[in-house]
Length: 104
Image (tube, rainbow, N blue to C red; front, side):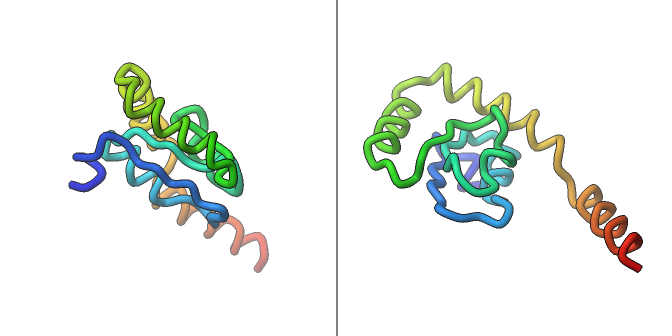
C-alpha cells in the first residue's frame, strides 16, 4: 500500500545486485526515479527516470520534475506496469535451473 499510495519512488542506490524495489514499485503503479548505475538501468529500462546518484543537482532536479509533471508520472506509471511483465519468479527459477543443468 505504500508504493500504491506514493506519488513516486526515489531510489538513488549506488549499488544494487538486482533492484527489486524498482520492480515492486512499478508493479504497484508507482512511477520510479532511480540510479543510472549498477543493474538499475537494465531493470528499469525506459520505464523510469534515471539519474547519476552522485550528482546532487541532477537528483534534486529530477525529483522536482517528477513532483511537478503529472503527465510524466502517468507515462512512467503505464510504462512500469508494462515493464514488470518481463520479470517473474518462474522465469528466474527456470533460468537458474538451466544454468545449474549446464554446470552439472
